[in-house]
Length: 143
Image 1 (tube, rainbow, N blue to C red):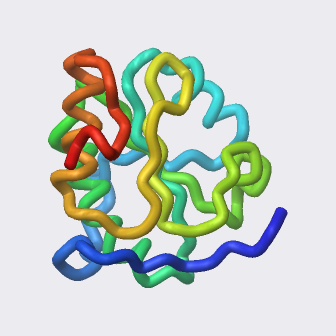
Image 2: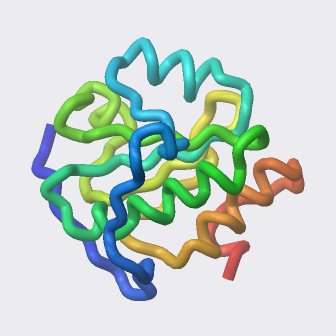
């Protein structure tokens, strides 16, 4: 599949990696191709998918933001996490070459992606557009 590498882009997410007690995690951890199909492709709700690696420092810094988004958009959007090492078939299907990579899906189709760390507001802007159904979601429109 190609070599995965870690990206650390400017405008990073502030804060340190935070471990939430079991039961407080809201993001759905996808562990099979079938689960990805069910939750992301056939799930119906707008979906954020965080492709990450446990060996990626920026991925650890993004994790609390992903959990915060899962809590904030509960009932409006689905927030999932995919370990690139565990689901290489899904990772290859979407051409993931650097992590963290966050893909956004609407009606089972990828509509946007952000690679590297971004401020929480970037992810929120895309999720807001998807949950409100207001059209364009491309990152250039969010600047």
